[in-house]
Image (cartoon, rainbow, N blue to C red; front, side, top):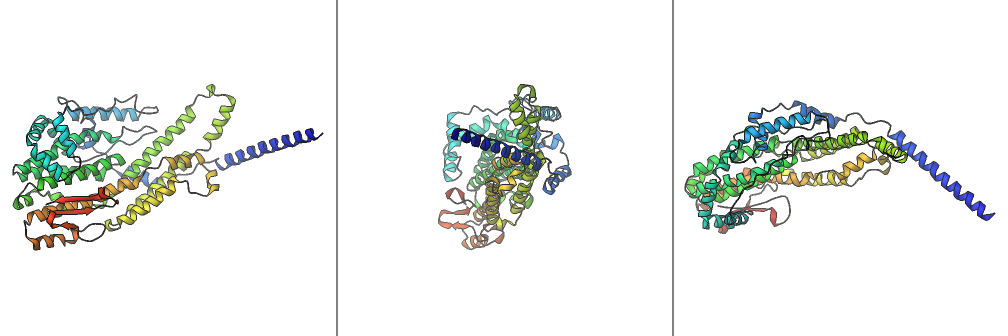
Length: 466
């Protein structure tokens, strides 16, 4: 009798749990019965994309970069144009990606001798050590620049382009990432080394011409790209530009130093160049592509191959993911980040702190528990797929400090040993540390100017000799 009562009680508990589970499931389905309309942030990003005019292939540096890794005897512009046409055609075709429709990206392969590889290894960190290595192995440098003169010509052709625009994702398909710019980095080394050699040989005007074109190009890419990856590459290229130019400057007399300074250095990194908004729009477009692919995969899955239980589970889980609601959430998060970063450069440190808080909240699913009932899968995907924008934004923001320190070092070099002129240059407000609004750190005995960046640690102390 007792066993019978226990069995009935167990059945009652089991049925109650099943009923409660079913009711909870029905409640979830009811809450998730509709997707959201397009949010204000998502609509603003969309309108911004629509307002940007197209760029002709002949002026688009992205197209040239697509073919930059071509063999020495090939024409990068021709190959890049062919690849761009292939990408545009593939973007308009139904499918889940471009990998089977577009030829894989090429990688620039150079057979550099061990002596050159060792030399470049010593110059990974710019400074007196690199200058000494270049000077002591000048024959290696000259042979390198002679062997790769074709690469310098190719890079100068890239620098002649006046605009930059990557293809945007279309219906769940995104163009290959702009990491093909990494193939440009060896050529960038050649150009900067050639500028250094021109300075060493007493040809500051020739060095200036190379640095002027290089500086203009990377700032143009910085302002126009819609890719976080490209934004970071452009910032890295500009950092190396200032470091190599500083080494070249140290080879010159005071009179020659004044002739080397590129005119573009006189212009502050603008709000447009520092802005992360277009890169965030690119991240949002990429997120939409990933979300759309997930939605297509769910819809295209072959129902005939699923068991009855799997069909029920699939139908239930697919209704807990709302594409537009997730897209809206990502747009709102990135809009918050863009607004947090949209401050005067002197407030950059506070802006970065705000961005870190926003990103920690986005990644930590710090929302009321009951809000997880709507679009729970989308919220989880958003939390785990959020990019760390603050690190990229810090690298971009540091460029203004690097520009000021480079220009200050050039002016100090041009003053020779006149201490009073040096003090006047140091006390020029437009060349102060952009974050502390105080003069740059001056080390006269070492003939050095130091700029302390946003990140703590020795790696954020950038020294420029004069």
